[in-house]
Image 1 (cartoon, rainbow, N blue to C red):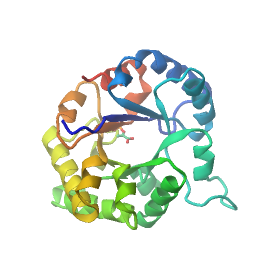
Image 2: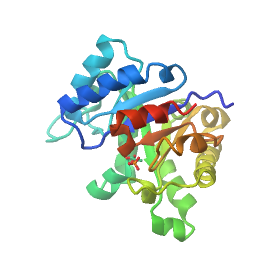
Image 3: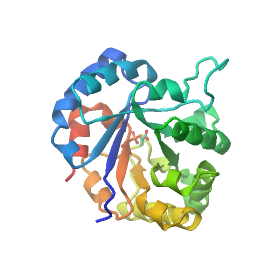
Length: 255
Ligand code: PEP
């Protein structure tokens, strides 16, 4: 046993109005009551639903953490359409997904942007979930480690060991996101172990022992237990399946 508490995060992406989001989180607040004694859970609604979901979680003291899907690194100003770290922190957002492959691929986020976001999230007292992952082409060319560890090192650049120790890294092979294809448990474990070794080399053994590493990519109730058996896999970042309350409950209740 690693001693790291598992973290399973539901990324709702650009789905659900605030009314749909209220409906989903109300269901989860009942169905996850037992499992959240053993596993940390976060839900990441779209920005428009954060306040509604926060109210439900806070009023009933529900042990599900609130998360966001993105943030801007600036504190405020003329950045039309963006959301600052302080705006999220004020809503009791605890986890912020940073550098999701959809942000990198569809919206042109660079490693440098991702690093600025990681720093801004930490400075606002929240926990970044730094996403890294290779394309199918990169995997087939044998460049998985180069890509993943390159993104990791760029994302963590300039951070001290204590900051890294409290973070979450999500290894998400891009070819497994939303495709129904999942990395084999051995492949997922091998990359997560490489991530931890790189953190040990750069930031020390203590940071490596404490950082939580999630796997993401078509996680379902039927594959979560096997994935979680990897000694360096501390949780999951779940997209599509997190929109289905029964499926997400089964995922979180994997043990
Ligand atoms: C994700 O959005 O991070 C993700 C892993 O999606 P899915 O579970 O749908 O593959």
